[in-house]
Image (cartoon, rainbow, N blue to C red):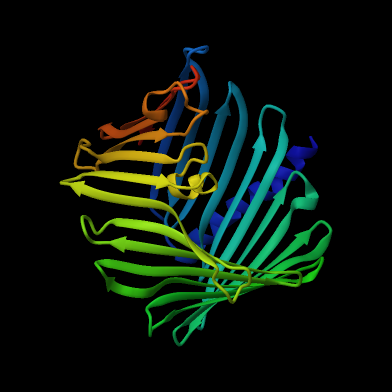
Length: 378
């Protein structure tokens, strides 16, 4: 009963939001009703058919406002129901959503936000109340631009108890002389005060064409009270065979102002034939696998992807196949070191029906996984 008593004010707020939107327009608004139903089924060697999730979204449009109800079932349990609404009130964009667990009648979260613009400055506020009250917060932000500099300031406050958590101020601009993106951020919090200043530069061109190679540099410097961390990534793009090949490297130095060595840790490339593209990635260092191939367990990846025609003049779907290769002893018994194959297919079969399929086949175990997702729109 306590949870229901809590829910009523938020439900009233959502109804009031739509009512205010209607009254502002002063006329009977257009009504629209749409929805989405999706279900996901997984198949493994030990569980041939498992219903992992099922959801339904109902969206009611009332003029420029919308009201939405989302019900979610996970692992055969009706564990989430979200009621939300969004719409304008004068020049303020409002959004509010309330989420609870119907099975246990348990409050999960309530989130509300407002955004408006005054004199080219964008203001926004977000309040997020969750089950663990000490994790609830309010976030205030303002952003804008002056000359060629864009800035954003964010303040985060705890709501229970009410206290200052952290604040950040960031500025970004383009260094026109080198066409490099610059960014500087200051971060403070309510525990230690000053936390750090981060300055970064991306795509600084070292040379345009040296023996057919373009070299660019990304650098980030983090200043804190205890240390200064400098990370620099070098990208070499040779145009000998294909312009979409890049060599990845980084500078190593004993201090932030010196360079002891340059290490090359990976190579990536991509080329296309008609609408089908082929990509590859190789990591030369185990600790760089994740950033190069996207999977920390494998040092090499080959990808084939392209579009799949959909019906009814809608946007095309797509397919993607990935082959990951590892080093011994992890894949000692696998052919050529092949450790994992993944595939996905996304296509709209009918105007209101789409199908998504994904598969994972590790060669070092029998833990393969097939995932089937069906979506119906109206």
